[in-house]
Image (cartoon, rainbow, N blue to C red; front, side):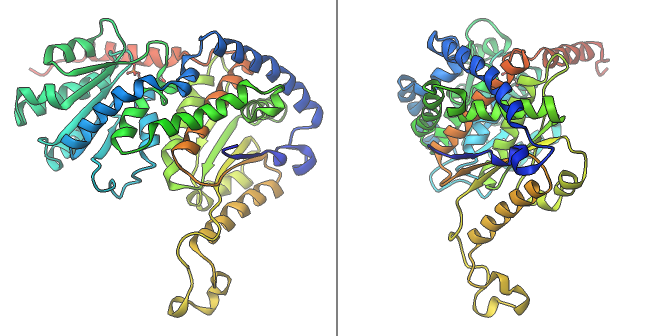
Length: 436
Ligand code: PA5
């Protein structure tokens, strides 16, 4: 197994009243059995292509060629898109760069998911466009933010480098058929890659949407899929929901909502490389489950930072949360934190310890403190964070979300409320007075 899934402290037997009783858990796990069987049937019939992507191999050769060209021709790659068209790739690329820049030989990758004019002025002011590539991702091809970003960037390329640069330096990913993004891309002669129309944005991380940026960053896309496939197979071959970590996680989350008012779910990884993963999870969970008056609110936290921030609320505020800590086996790793002249008697407790020892102690202490205060908490532990284990985590949470959606009786794959916002934006723009 790529990770350990420790749920003991979600139960009344361990944490008291706020935990699930055995009967409550048995009943929701029974429902999860049906949910998991339905997901298995859908997967076998090919109705869940976002899951089957974990086993796909054929497309990687073609993507590798595109990625190699980007790695050769560009010092910078700007990924334009929003929501599911941005967060999966960003999550994966965080394995390679957490803000200190890429490894030698890899371009620096920027993800821009807003239309803040200041961001674009800063971008054009600070990076030269001659060796900058743009990847524009929009499944629908009609999202106003992404189309606007594209137009602004192609205009800057056209003026700054020349018309040919638009065709050579822009790649567009969108679904087949007629849409504004595809029409514009065709007009300017850019490379257009197809987005699978059956794979929704927030479930697209294992498709070219997530993997192309990852490959440009120098990451092993096959390993991401292999990790996802491991977790998928474990779920598809589970004889009972209790053998599938994602089904157990969903059953606990929905059981705690129903019986103990846990209306929020906090995801708190302890690895900086999982910071964007927290945003990815937040979108996946919120946009998939927040429907028909139900769902639980995902809260993104980061260890150790939020021990000095949100933790006060978690321990002493409303009792309405379930916690998931994502930990790394980091003890004994990293540099010494107190040695020789850099020690002080007040820091005795650090003597002989490494930075990894401190992080290990912080994460274990936080989990124990939450449990001791009666807060339902599960711990996911990974030995080493790499493409394979990250792929496994991504699949875990996609499956957990799908099981949770079935327990809540809602469709995990649509987003009617988001669409309403997109429509209103268009109408407000139409009614805005144009500059004279
Ligand atoms: O997950 C989703 O479906 C959304 O978050 C979309 O990814 C987001 O709205 C962007 O849509 P599109 O890729 O069509 O531009």
